[in-house]
Image (cartoon, rainbow, N blue to C red; front, top):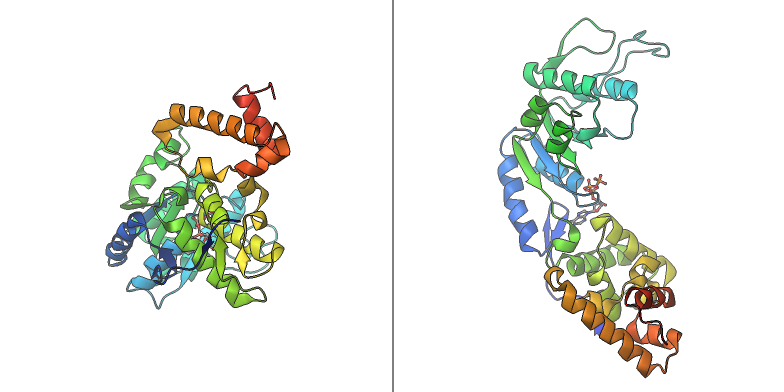
Length: 327
Ligand SMILES: Nc1ncnc2c1ncn2[C@@H]1O[C@H](COP(=O)(O)OP(=O)(O)OP(=O)(O)O)[C@@H](O)[C@H]1O
């Protein structure tokens, strides 16, 4: 067990549900504030779990449309036909199974905001229809003949570059320019200085509120592992990891062995100080640390793995990587 870390005395900034201490995110808040004052389309770009939907909701809440509806649709989860019907609605009898008329999201979001997640996945023919709605502020539901006028602010999000999708012929350039009048980029969690720790305390407080377990401190070894991990699932993954620890562990201290296996596989003391431009030195240092641990453990691999705070399998993999096989 390492040192016991207590929650910091000061609360992190809470900006419409977005928790942060990092300068990168604070900078983003001022962009959100400026963008919310207008009705210009915003394109949010960031990896999964970085908070794009939270930002979209904040943009809506801060805007003059806050009393109007907020509607969201993930373009990657539906078939082409279902997407068309979700977005534009249909008239009774428009297709087999359309036993009654149904309003689409553009109509349901009238006077408010429509958030289209994973916009790069929108099929090309629907991109053409979306462009027309943006230009004409009206559309015709499937099977209908009458134009329906709407006043909707469009927010969209993507985890990959729309520019690439355009270059590959999968996305219309004219639509891309229409959608990203205001581009907002959300950095990966691992790149936000101080946010892993701040969000860890935030989620601990959320899960403390749900009971029955109450966590009052975090073992520094667990915090090192949280800091060292790369967080491919970003904030959503961090929330899941803390929830997992609440479910699997017990007592007032959150410890390393309560973290998910991916996190325990990481060697915290080495990875915590990782610098991308230091890979060569780091390799040497890692090799020295491995040999040192093996010496101290008199060649016993399980003991050496314990000393390094990594699993036996990780130790075995690292020994192979460094070609240390004479132990
Ligand atoms: N800065 C933050 N503070 C507090 N909670 C956050 C923050 N960022 C994200 N979250 C939480 O993490 C989860 C994922 O966030 P969100 O759904 O907004 O991400 P996303 O980028 O839209 O993900 P996806 O691309 O997978 O849809 C949500 O539960 C959200 O409340």
